[in-house]
Image (cartoon, rainbow, N blue to C red):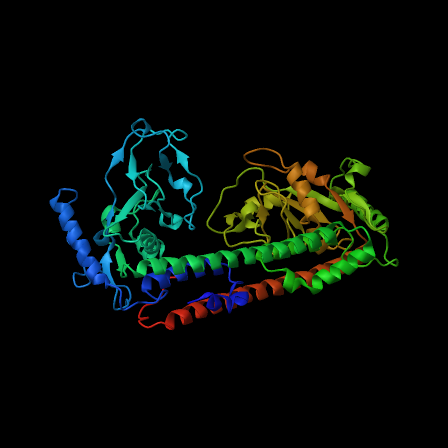
Length: 575
C-alpha cells in the first residue's frame, strides 16, 4: 500500500464522515498482518526470536528477577485471528513483553523534582500525542505511581475508546491507570505500540473490559492478548512505513479540514448576506446565486438546518417573494381583524382585553416592506390562553391530554399521550378548546415551538402549552406557524422565558410579541415559496445522505480491495 493508492479515490471517499480515521485504522490493520512492509527472507524468523525470548525469561526467572512463565504458541491454543507471513508467528502479549511493571513510588518526595509525572489526561485521545509534560515539582502527588523507563510502552488500560498508547522518550512515573510494558530481546517498542492501537487489539479489549462506571482491562486478559510477532529486523521497517502513511493521513486530514473551512466561510458569508442584505434587488440576485449552488455549498446536515432557518427568516422579513402593489396593505387587514374581534366580543364568544402597548421604534429590529405593518401577536389573535393548570386524573383510555413532550418535535404526536375522561375534557373545553387550524405554542420547559393543529379530533392540553386562535379567513395559519417559529420570534420566546428550573413563558408576554404582518395575498405567496424551498432542503438532505452512503461504500470497497491484493486474507479486517 502506498501514497498513490490512498490518494487515487480520496476526493470521493473523503466525503465519508470518518474517512481519514478509518484510513488510519486500516494502515494499522495492514501493519499487524504483515501486509505493509516487504518481508526479507534473510531476516531471522520470528520463531527464533520467540526462542530467544523464552531463554531470556528463563534466565530472568533463575535470577529471581521475574516469575517463571511458559511461552505460548498457536498449538497451545493462542487465538490466531488471521494468517501471518511465513516468517511471522503468533504469541500473547505476555509472551513477548512484561505487562505491568511492579516497581512503585508512593510520594513525589521519593523522586527528583524534575521527574516526569504522567497522567492519562496528558495523552491525546486516539492520536496518542503527548499534550503536556509535567515535572513532579509542578504536579505533586501522594498516591501510588508506577515507575517507567525510557523505551517502555505506556498503555492506558482505562476505557478502550480513549485509545491512549505512548512510547516513553525518557524515564518517569505514571498513574496506575497507565501500564508500562517492556519488551524482551530488544523488541521494538514502537511496533508494540502499533499492535496495541491496532483494530485487532482494540476490538479484543472492548470485549474484555469490565466495570460500568470506569471500565478497564484486567491484567490477565491483557497478558493473553493475541500478538502478531514479526522478525526483529522487520519491525523497524513496519514502523517507518506506518509513520510515512500517517504523515500522509495528517496531510489528507488538513486538506479536508481546509476544504471544509473554505466551504463553511462561503456558506456563512452567503447566509449572513441573505439574512442582512439591505438592497432588495441585490439581495434577490444573491439568493438566486446561493440557491443555484446549494448542492455544492451544503455538505453537512447542520447546514441544511441553517438553510431552513434562513428561508423562514427571509420569509418574515419580506425578502423571499416580491411585493405586489395590488395587494391590500397590512393596515387594512388589521382593521378587518379588529372589526371581527369586536363582533366576537359583542357575541360574547371572547372577552374584551386591555389594549396592548404601542410598538416603539426601538422594538422594530429591521425594516419591512411598505405594504407590511408591525403589530403584536395578541392584536391578530382572538384568543391566547393555556391548558389545565392542575394535573387531571389519568386513565387507560379516553381523550388525549397533550403536554410539551407531545409537540416539542415540531408536530403533534399522539403516540405517547396520556388520557383523561370525557367529563374532564368537557370541563377544560369551557376555557380552552383546541380546534383544527389553531396553533399550539410550548410555554413551559422547552419554550417557543409552534405547531399547527392539523388533526380534526378532540383533545385537551396542559398548562405547558398555549393555545392561539385567530381569524382564519384573514390570516394564513401556515404563515403564522412559520412566523412564530422564525429566529426573530423564537428569540423573543427565549428572552421572555422566566425562571431557572421549570422555565415558563407567560401569556402576558406572548400577547406582546412583536411581529411583522404582510398582506394576506403575500402570506399565501410566502407559504408557497417556503414550501418549495423546504422541499428543496429535503431533496438536498436525501442527496447528502446518499452521497455519504456512496462514499462510505467506496471507502469500504477501496480498503477491502487493498487488503485482498495481499495473500493470506482469510479474515475480515477491523477498520
